[in-house]
Image 1 (cartoon, rainbow, N blue to C red):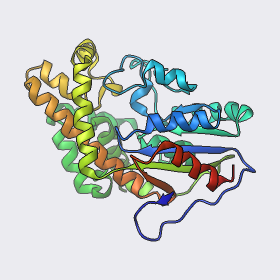
Image 2: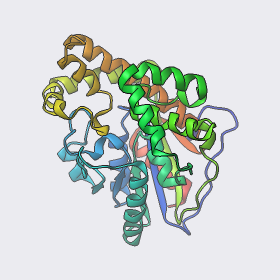
Image 3: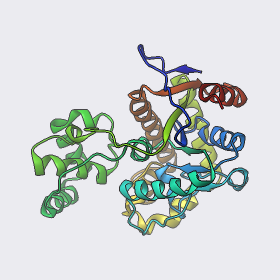
Length: 318
């Protein structure tokens, strides 16, 4: 097992006086699901999904929800447990996941958490950042400006007032852009200045396991994955959701582009290429996010799973 290639990175040294949460992370399509299942089987435990796109029962193909065979291979939690019509935030997930962990740690010394949504993983492990209350009229004004001027206006302002956060935010997600801008307008301070002020203490230890590959390999896997989604019925799935396109849950890659196709902005071929391009951009942001975590133990995605599990056992003296 090795740490991330960046110089000076260190290993996690924990013991089993506390329960252990093994976090499986990495870019989209890298093989996290398969690894998490095998780890769960090796330790006879259960899996919590921290993939925010897989929470919603109406979204299956476009979010690469684990297959029925995969779900049957190990107990999973937080997979398609919500509707796109539900209001569900990262704070809600943090609270529910911690409650579920309390229950699971009564039965298991080890639990697996898996997902590429770095914010959701961090919420469970370290707690959410604390933001000030912002007057509701600021968000209302931003929504009005978005309706009148479009998403490019939001991007331009955020890139100017908070270039640090703009580098890693999903620039296609108007809700996240508006959230960052309302913090700035309400406080005069950039959204990024409120991030990671302090770490919240948890009643469990954490061991991060990451899967990585050369960028070209990741991009090739993403392109093939999108083609497989289209072949499996992604276009039909998105068409059935078109009437609800303004739902926050649907402000995500794979659906936004197809909504634009349905409304005549793109050809079908162009929409598919946009999905691939935006998914590659998402993978780049994941790399940036997880790259800042110096406690992740990185493995090449082709490393035999049995070898990864052996390294986990050796590291934890299990």
